[in-house]
Image (tube, rainbow, N blue to C red):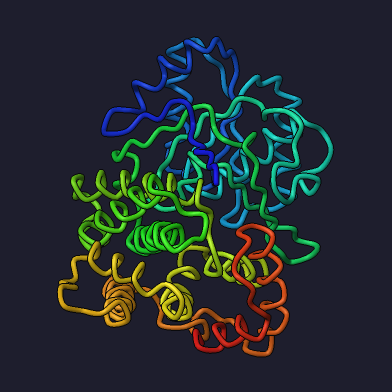
Length: 382
């Protein structure tokens, strides 16, 4: 079978890369940016810093700080209105997955017209989005470099998954100095999101040798650095390694896709407005316990990348070691132990499961499974 590998054309990494990116932006000839971010980053002055750096390159900007933690259709529509009224000719997303996804939605509709819901699914757009530069401030979602865009439909209480080559940013920037102020809880949640990306990509039926290499290196870096990044946000070695890890995980899942963890987490986020990374972290060992019955040797590889000595272990024993390592890491960085602690309700499991199955089949073409199996995983996660 043939495969296609998607990634932005230019990706700038490391301390100081934000300043260097300004020259690359100027070289494109852009004149005015719509900066899409959240209220927290705007209040912290990070958006002002980007605006000032742009001004030094004679590039004007206007700020939209309405991206919510789970960006909505309304967020996209409001940002699009500001884009049109301001005359901006490109978009900058500043933050983590929420501003990036919101900006993708804005840029996609700006170039293609219609409504953001028109693009739910795979490659539904006709032309590339308005040029998008994604400046990352977290180490988890990898949305700054992927063709994935997740927008919450408030009316349906679901997360729409848009998988479209035309939402891939033009340029991504990962400057760890922007990540130093991340609070412990966000560092933990986004780090576990990245781990989930890597593991789901590695056990995916669409995995290739390229995505495998990216996924396992990401698992190795996360396992070695996430605890330190959570404990000491100023540890720039840990921050930089996590930036590379989440990017590698993004390279993996952007091309091998994801699985039941994300399909299920999307429903929790859309239904209860829960943080995506935390939902992934809670669900991950339960879904991988299910996967261990069909690909234990792959999970044994995961255990090895997490620093477990798997020599002499069978594939099944190695898979169990991986599940133990995942649970241990989650507990040590303060991830809640179950969905009940997040406020999810067991009575909602049938609806959540039905929607998750639709999500998984639409995005990843998984091996046949029925709603009852997903319901069982949900119940185990409580």
